[in-house]
Length: 109
Image (cartoon, rainbow, N blue to C red):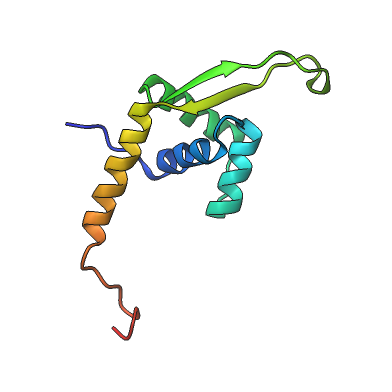
């Protein structure tokens, strides 16, 4: 049985995908806060990224240390094919669940 993604895992994977090559903590957090309107702690973000990496959905690497970061490296993330497949499965499942559903108050209902 395939592993389904939780809502926050989907949001994090989509942010990593959108940032394509420049995905590290701060921009990922900003992408989520701007697009999803959700406040995100850096601890919750990294816990989720670590879990997604353990599942084989993202990979990470460290940049060279930079002077503007006091000699610290940035940890970048990239979506792996298994992560893209997990996102597609989650989207298909949600699309299937929503098909034919109308909420009260929607379109005169």
